Amino acid sequence: MTLPSLAEIEQLAAARGLLLRFQVRRWLAITSLRVVVARPRPEQPPLLLGELKGWTLPLPDGLQLDTMRVQGSHTQGVGALIWAATFAWALEATPCRSARLLAIRDHEAQHRRLVRYFRRLGFDPIRDVGAAAADLPLRLVWGGAGLLMRGDCAVGLERAWRAAQWADPA
Image (tube, rainbow, N blue to C red):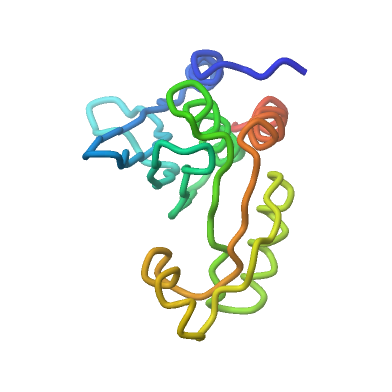
């Protein structure tokens, strides 16, 4: 399968009547990222359906993903669009080829769902981040305890793109 470009992902979002937007800010070697999918509304601001926040360092494993949220009704495929766009952007605009994230461990059942979801995107466990003194720096970066996971951006893009194409947002 040929990987889609960011432009192709934006076209799919537009064909579904959705806005796909990036906010990218650079400060020294760190680039912050916010990916948003919204539904335009007449005479009102667009309705936010989902967003992902993260940052990059100029390294092959420099994509760090922090917050992913999808909200509201008629959001099928929104998450897949956000993931696909994020991975495509990383592959096109940065040297990043893999991403890291933390499957937060707030509630055990929710944690298991998150791990399953991230595995479907191609993420694999690296290590548990818990209460040990050595985990403190990671807890400060990620904001909690959980399972640190790493995924290949090309694999994530392929899987998210496939899901986005099959999703029916109506």
